[in-house]
Length: 295
Picture 1 (cartoon, rainbow, N blue to C red):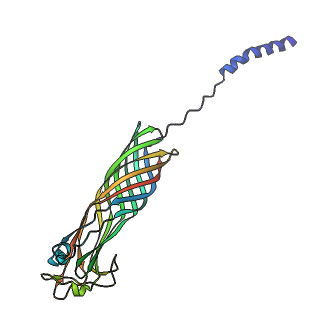
Picture 2: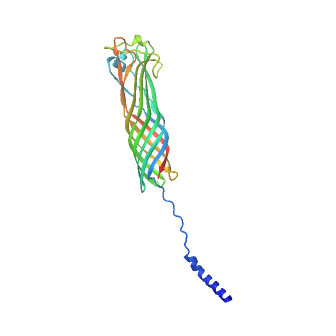
């Protein structure tokens, strides 16, 4: 029995390395897949916009308005034509964006649409003496971009797997409100302003807009303008699904023209008016935001 036990123990010792060699070895964990930019995304942004406003050009519709707008009109009595004020568009923006990306190696193609609320606005005024004795005409203008949106293509390059540089461009549209007011002060308008060739003007108080003088001519426009946009930006993947972005866009929206009409025609005279022709609204915007990628 003793010899049998020793033999069994010897066999067990000899067979142990073979059994251990036959046991499966646990494979090391696979590295996580690289992040992907492909997929639908949705996000929000906020920023600032500014631009040099294109002030309206004034075009007379009748002989009385011609006298107001030309140096050889009331200016023949020592005055000046109506002035077009100059100012600067500026204000905050904020909104939402959504789009889809396709990643091919280090290139990212995409389409994006956004809608922005805006407080971008310009208000300005200018005064001149248009007739003697010291009849002062104050012209006030106001332009406001209430909201705007874009639909754009994007093309980008990935310097690293989580950092995107891109250019973008496409269609832009938005609501623009514009207002022109001409008020007379410094003398009694009813005793100084006379009609010409069947057209004339008088004034009302209190003022309607923008000046402490009596209001004589007013014109307003509210429109949805279209145009184009172009810009560039950068975006970082801060997690596999969340990105942070910074972007610049130039937005150009088309111009408009509308009549600026006397508030109170003189008795026995047709109401005088002139046309305010407003050029394109050119706005620079910078904004930051975030996106969530559904992939």
